[in-house]
Length: 384
Image (cartoon, rainbow, N blue to C red):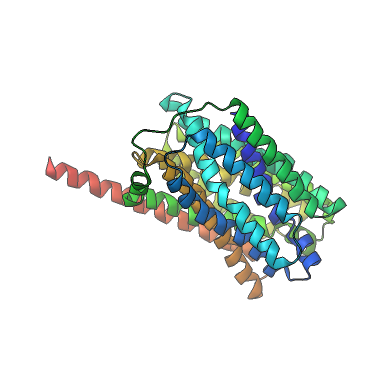
């Protein structure tokens, strides 16, 4: 579990530290911050592409081998991000770094779930994702401070080192589970025929986009809108990470008890917290509780990860990986819509309103999933 979570820690630092470093690498490359956000979207696009493609192609490979290989590629790509010259090459390296992200977390979640009784799958998934959320408390503020003190490129060197350590630990300690003899790319693609899989992916892609909308511009809002010194940013990022970590643990617990109410509660809290954020975005002190509550919305991650494994039938690998494709579609959508609001002159606080609207949109997919399930049950009743 620790070896798997360390990989999640590396992924969490790479994904969230990049957002917090936008003001610094945009200045270095001589571009606007809204343009620098394209590097964040490139990483997210890499996740969306890599998760299904790698998972389908690796259907017959033992999970430990998949996990070690993916972490090794992740280490290499992030190392390149710290070395390349020119913004175009940097964006390309961020796309490459995103490719292993979803496949790794999906395979790690399945391995963790296989080691516990069925009633504790949500908790096991949350433990793996705990590495990702703890990264936002410790790793991201450290990477941000490192970036401010020695240059943003050192943050990616730090990620590369952590990812390499994770690959080594997985090779040493993870069980070598033989792949399912019946596994095949075609069977994994069967997940795409299940409507409940698509409804769940919609909950993540739309509902989680609001959190990314706020987080991407958090550094700029704190420094440029609230007037706080840049030295306050690592502490604010740690507050966000604390909310994410506690929310993720709560989400894993809730997923094992009441799935749909847990999803609705998580999305509802996100709506309220992001509206609260928009009202206090000009006050650095009031931003602290608002940012904590926005981070708590990460409770949605282990809940949806567990739901996907429940509704995917025998296509577990692809469904588990697609959860992270959905979240990184959110990672691309949220900053893009937030950037549109900023470009329209609506002000920094508008990203909170946009985020709240996206979280509310996630509830629409919850309703569609419930209606679809009720319709299926009625149809089965008539057949019987």
